[in-house]
Image (cartoon, helix red, strand yellow):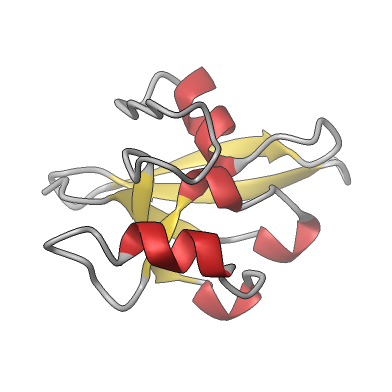
Length: 109
């Protein structure tokens, strides 16, 4: 693996994992990267933490993520099926700390 890439694993609805090599040197959020990989993420607000349509559930590596902002928490709090490990992918900037992260799209599978 190149030093400017990390591996992010996405759990598919059938329970299998897809491993993706994600660049950390382009300033992308997890939402932008997953959209580029053609995952079904609406991202209606364009990454401003205003819609929660990019919600993911962090299955492994939650401790590697930066603390949730008040704006992110407030938006997640509007979801009726919020899980303790739910995060907005638009608020998760890809970084070396996130190597090995396992997520699934919220509500998928």
